[in-house]
Length: 273
Image (cartoon, rainbow, N blue to C red):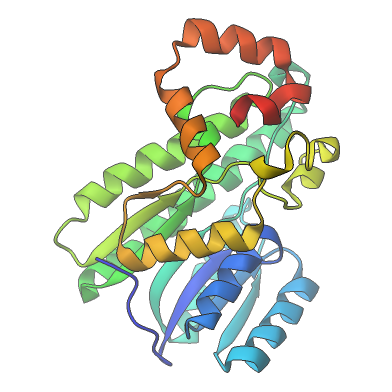
């Protein structure tokens, strides 16, 4: 139950690969010799990353410009992966977007898109690609969640709920897969210096709080791929994030929720760390 050894006839699919943790996952996997299928909306960034990885590591890299919130686009992606002809040795579901603010004040369509990307796209890609892995008897899935998965978070209600789904689904799936040769690993990052804050309309939260609470994408990616390679159920990178998860699990919600609600979006980073 681990990520298979690199092969020229195999690929690891990485979604949300144009920046942040996704790009870092692609670099980490390529450095270990894995061929890649990079998925994101920004073709220019994907093309630049693919060229970098081919030149630096000599691996085969395919680029798939895809808006994973769209049903038709996901179908086209799956068809393109099949036409590629390489065995899908791994799937890294990293694509995601945040949602910061009071739910009632958020634009409904934007909130639905958070669920479409963070939940529906992840779920469908696993559902479509997992059977082939199980039939072969090897393969590994990595689903990127968050430390926010472990407690409801006012002013971030939809995002935290989508990550709670990711953890629950992934950990149950990992258990179901025992004995198949396939694993499902969840990585739960804390505050990470990525563009998700800009895309979520909360650029002012980037880097807020103590610097030691923040991680770089490459640190998260290294821990995640190590866990994927070992077939682990769950990875929580960093001591402060482990403490945050423990707090989310064990602090009574009668205490946690009022505090989180008073802090609101401005205090979000301090709360979750």
